[in-house]
Length: 183
Image (cartoon, rainbow, N blue to C red):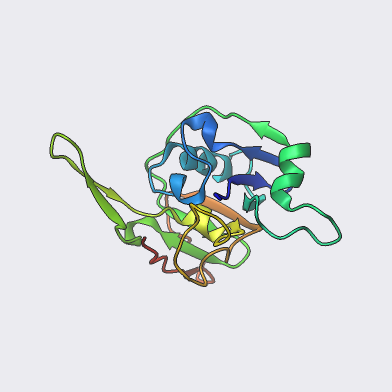
């Protein structure tokens, strides 16, 4: 069966639902650069956004239970948290995904093309996996629609403070993380 995911602000116990933006709930149904649903989360985590400086989790409903509880974070927040439906405000200039805790960043311009799609008019579109859902997810490889490859990058930033910005971090403590996943 398919595993469903919701991005969550741990501090606020808030989440957004991909169905509200015409996307599927499975991880790889919405994890593409330029996806409207993921853009909603980008706006929440950027500086000035509602979730800026919050710990972020892309929680799968098959993830492990929380310590001392009989539910995982997806179940807890979807039952007791607050669902948000923010308006779309796509900022196409956001280029760097930044982990404020590990002092790492990903440059979207370096994410490899995963697939190319050609429409009925011959226009070609590149599909690149968006690093945010995969780096912050918990529960991958437990259901249909999950990322099928093996990588230490999957979930590496789960529960960390993650933001997105237009410019590369200037602080020398920040190191570039190469996100090279394709499917």
